Amino acid sequence: MTVSLVTDERLVVPPVLGWAVLTGGAVALFATYWDEAWHTDIGRDSAWIAPHLLLYGAMAVAGSAIAAWGVRTWWTTRSLRTALRYQPVLVAGLGGAATLAAAPIDQLWHARFGRDAVLWSPPHMLVVFASSALIAGLIAGMPHHRRAMRCAASILLFGNAIAVVFEYETDVPQFSETLYLPIFLATGLAVAWVARAAVPVRAPVTTMVLGYAVVRLGIAAALAVLGRSGPDLPVAVLGFALVDLPLPHAVQRYAAGAAGASALGWAAAAAGLSSQSPDAVAIVALPTIIVCVVVVVAGGFGRRGVAVAGAVAAVIVVAVTSTPVPAHAHDPGQGAPRGRIELVADSDDARTISLRATVADGCGGLAASRLVARRAGVTVSAALRAEPGCVFSGRIAVPTEGRWFVYIEMLRDGETLEAWVAVPAGHSAHVAEGRELYLPARAGSADRPVQIAAGAMLYLLGLALLVAAARVVRRGPGTGPTGDVVASR
Image 1 (tube, rainbow, N blue to C red):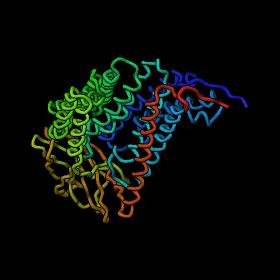
Image 2: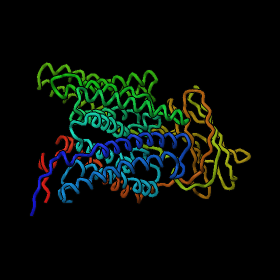
Image 3: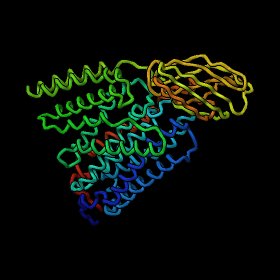
Image 4: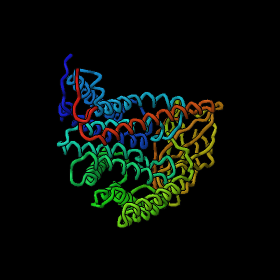
């Protein structure tokens, strides 16, 4: 038996592969925003639309680079078992595999269970969790002296993780807007911890959020050129830079970051720079700012003061965010097509939306059912009238400004058919779109236990990947199973 020692430096990701993953990830991030804008502005389409092709290609590049790194590790160690014990490549590989597996799982999920939260459905969240684990594994496998690569990876990780709230930041919220800020803060602070642990620069979090802001502005500019809806300005993320303040205790630094992000998020909403409701943001922002300032100031009283302030902060945050909220989300365009329909919508300053629908292929057997508007867990309905010439019309008043998904529902042979259009409320707007009239897939009562069990399994899988990712990042750059060397036999 021959035993040789392979140093960690020989197992770290080669620069060409690391940059390939980061480039593919950046393109995939843009494709994700493009895909969201496409579905909002145009509706669901073929699997071969441009955003999907770009996303698939970018994922293929990143996945191939991770696979090449794994093969290289195997070749270097001369042992598959030893290669699998090298945690950075293992976590990155598992993250990549789970990301790829999520696509067919998502198709099966919607075919079986129908309408669900567009982003927060378990298959979609598995993509976010798994791809975040992939990036974290990549960071852990980077040479410590590759500062530019580590900075770029932290920016990509932030962009990927913060996608959990990107429906709020693209004005298509699925659930109550009070949930936006606590999820945004928890995600941002978690990635800030990774940046401080893994990026060897003087101000890692500041570097990360400034880089992400530039990326987001670039995405918005590109979408504008393509004629698509863009995301909000990335104002709130800049507040996380306060995590880099030279405060004596870590809890003070993260409290400062939470206060800064909360204040900027609230200010952006109040100034109209973001699409969230200022009142909804304030419900969480105000107590968060107060308790975080208390935590920062309590640092002057030593660790005991910080601990007490932190406990008070936790109690208040839990009290604010644990109130049950409505959760009727929309997943527009899911279902078997039943023909084409032309939708024309007009909105006014009084938040009233008028909709006129013309069935293109004839309306034999169709009967008017109702008009429905959905946004942020709120559902409003109104009467729908049938008119001569296969025309259906109605008016609906919505309670808040912002983009509402307005559905027309009709009956045929005992089935409810629907079509939808996204309409901005609160100001004068005119929207005219051609859509599919479709039969939405709906989960039966017998499917509910299966849906809950399957969703729990997918969330647990994603969380397990995140735990593994946090552990490998905490171990430090390029660590093998023993911390410094990997033996091959």
